[in-house]
Image (cartoon, rainbow, N blue to C red; front, side):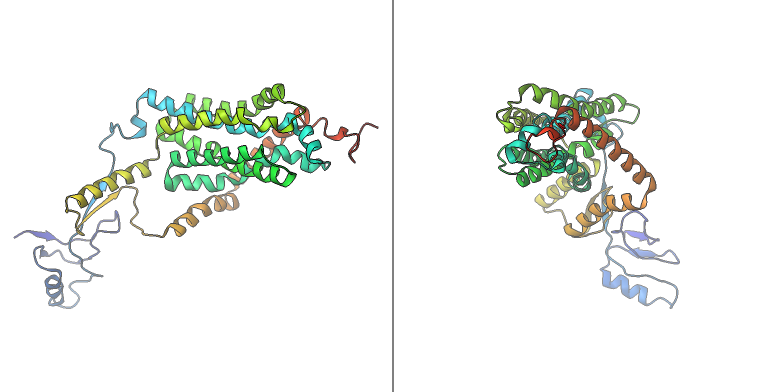
Length: 364
């Protein structure tokens, strides 16, 4: 007869038997649960203390197969890692380039829409950057639920749709709203791309990858106005918003579909665990006594809205209660403000206050 020494439960996971026993006692595993309960009940009072007794549950923890597991993103080949790095960097280039690319056309767009308010004219450029402030609060937590790859691809598609819509806007509110929504989608590479680098490179290896990723983020806003300033047709203000830029983004999006694979370990291991569950179910062997869980699975079952609310509230808590996050955010906001003010003033905004028929005429 097989027997088991009933001991205090394991601290890992919540699915193990939660029986607490003062004295070890051999328990017949072949006996039905009701018999086990009767055996415990027949003992002298105080000898045993327990919350409840369940049939033995075998938890199979799903982890990497070993330190050299090829499915672990950190063990990918160098070629595969750098292909991922270049794709993420391409995403991280096209979005910031779009943020400032409209600056050379600010004067022409303002005249076409009859805009004379200096604040509204400046928002033509800065509304996109405002999306950068809101987007990471959403896409960052979502990447920890659904994975980096899916969030970056879907967010870039969201950016592409609204960026294309800017070219068909017919009034000021439409243009500003579309620019803001494009910025929300375009913020994903900025907020999630660094996490991808951390997923695929060990800390002593990620220096060059992070340098490339950070460099293109600063290069985009610099080259965007220069390239578009050369091609901007003064007779057609919305030429700056047309197909050339979106065509480049479509190419980047297609490359991401084929080259940008999932890198977030909890998502990868959960997929691995789900494959094992499906395999057991297909063979009719996935009974209630076998539990397959990822090592990242805490065992807590919560609804999707609760999970999303918890993930989305985390950045807000950090910005409200962590002084180092507050200081770093303030510094970043200051740098971005100065950065884009320079673009606006010298690449598009210098002529804003020179409308002969506008209230901000400074010619005198």
